[in-house]
Length: 98
Length: 313
Image (cartoon, rainbow over all chains, first blue to last red; front, side, top):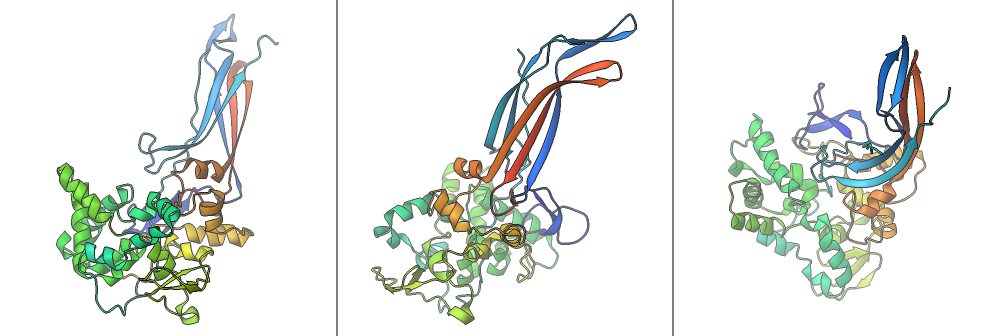
């Protein structure tokens, strides 16, 4: 969102339209320019040591990931939120290997 | 199989603010000012339009323009906050209590949400403030709150604001809007006895019509500048400056098929059309020294296809 400056001076964000004048920062999606986000989600696993070696025991090899694009007028998820996009994908980890 | 969900939250903190910005003194020469909400509603009564333009009127009735100082309730609450936190908190505003509010004070909001307030007395400003307080008061009775909503919904951005009052931005070049005329795409006679003339507006399908209200930044013409929308600024400097050629009306009225029910983020179709959303995933095991860490890599690419930044606020 455009982060408005309070009364057009200083480093404080203004909230209501009566005190907003200017902009401190802009985190909006700009028109026609790609914006990328990356997420790394750990699979459920247990990490132990056997004979001094690290052993990873994967508890589930499949994960369903749903990525939602939400429009939140109040900035919080449980207040008047609109789901614009939702994509679900299945992600798997290979069994076996070296 | 366990299901994990990641929510890519784009904190779209959009203030449901400005709808329309206007030259507030366009009708300064109006002989008699409205002295109540009811009088102002009568002065800008567009109910007769629906006799011939029924479908368009129905569309408009569903829009936020039709309740521009009530909004979803949040606009009315923000008017109250403007008085409670802003006006009464400022040493030099001249407002010590809600009853002190004059038209010039409320123009911080009304410049866009109700530009015709410039043609009303201070009593109308006080009435709007009174009902905004009632609406936002958790102790108000249901009856009182309903009455407040009803009164606040009587005045709005209706046919006569866009098709008359704000239909001409450059008055030295194109003249001042006439009270007996509606402005659209044609010249000629108009069947409405209250508005018997029809004239072409040079900006009816131009973005500047919307830009009067949908914001450049601080409203410096006010004694105390307010800032609500910045969309038109974004449209000019981040979209058209980069080669964008579409007009507000093309997306919000035509492609969306919403007509005069101009919507933005609340409409699922507008939301879907606004952003290209691509998700790629891959499972992999990252090696942290001797430790294998299984993880899902999720890459999201978003391209905003609107003619302005998203969100605004």
